[in-house]
Amino acid sequence: MNKRELMRIFKDNAYVRMGGTGEELKCAEYIAGLCSKYGETTIEPFPVEMGELTRSSMCAEGVNIRCKGYMLCGSGTVSAPLYYLTGTDKYSLSLCKDKIVMIDGYLGYWRYQDIINNGGLGIITYDGNINYPDRDIDYRELRSFVSNGVKIPCVNINVKDALKLIKYNFSKVELCVAQNEYSGESRNVVLTLPGEIEDEIVFTAHYDSTSLSEGAYDNMSGSVGLISLADYFSRKPHRYTLKFVWCGSEERGLLGSKAYCSAHEEELEKIALCINLDMIGSAMGHFIACCTSEEKLVSYLGYMGSELGFGVKPYQDVYSSDSTPFSDKGIPSVSFARIAPKGTGDIHNSYDTTSVLSADKLSDDIAFITAFADRMANSRRVPVAREIPESVKEKLDIYLLRKRDEQKIK
Image 1 (cartoon, rainbow, N blue to C red):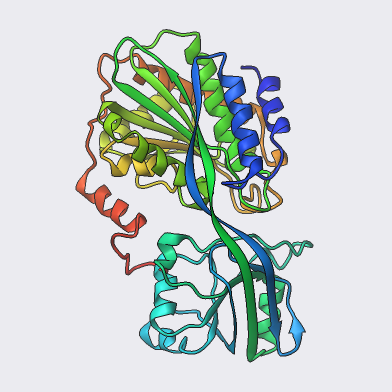
Image 2 (cartoon, one colour; image 1 turned 180 degrees about the vertical axis):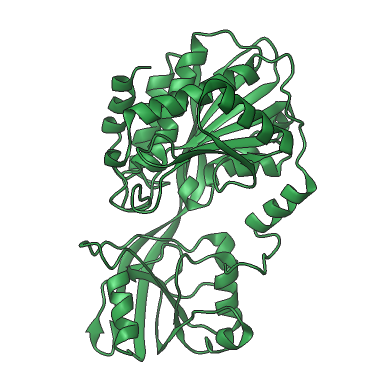
């Protein structure tokens, strides 16, 4: 595909595509329509929890603060002293008791469980940048695997208001969240290109976005790259059968890739490798290849980059994207991304548009990924060992919350 065709796809999908919404379905149908000319393409729905907020409010000592309630945090009103939690030591956590707790960053599993176990009554998070002119607020959710059946009112506010709460020593707040929770539907788009053998290579990228974002960089760029790969292999011979999966609801906790692995459990043993594209083509930044595999793949990609004159930083780790559920099933994976430096490629906000992308960088990134994929797809046997090293399994356990990483704040 040429650069003009690639950029056209971005233009056609420049809208918010939250997992489980009609906009996500619209994009899924668009991708399926494009790929139907390459081969058998299906849209595979899977259930997702949804919530329709009917009220979100926050009042701090008589001052109303703009907020958005967390989807799936239940409904309720709570009034209590405000406590800003900045540490994870036992003493700091003990002060959560009977408080509404404000935290930095995202509301992860361990942070939530610590607050609940120490008697917190409600939670406030914040996002944005104090130097940006906007007062946007992201619409977040209390994921079911985070709440583990215990829900308290949670809201998200803009960082400017969070700073005001602490700077001026607001001591008491009231949170109110009301919503209708129901079972909805998200979708994966799957294209199959049969090869000479039944053994498979799976390609993944997510096409959903967060609530404020067009998601051009994160991750329509990866989805466009996947479409380009599908176009290439539809016209080229390949020994391995190729599966292309555009995953829904990745931003909600890798739900699409988890659903695919669950629905295709019996087929997973045929998959030799997963190749994931997540955030490529940024005008600024360096290109990485995160290998959730044996160390030899790291060396292979480093040598290949030198051979082709393409700068790539390969390393062994777990990448927070749709490759991870496959690796958790014992399938080696590699995730490709171009990581933009801070301030040159924001994600999960309204600044994630095509303005941070470069058609030339996108084309170069796709060319390198295609060259690697072509070698794997036409190998007599995919050279990557179909096993996950023990050290990487431990990282998977930490990422998938089966084990706590005591060295990091969650």
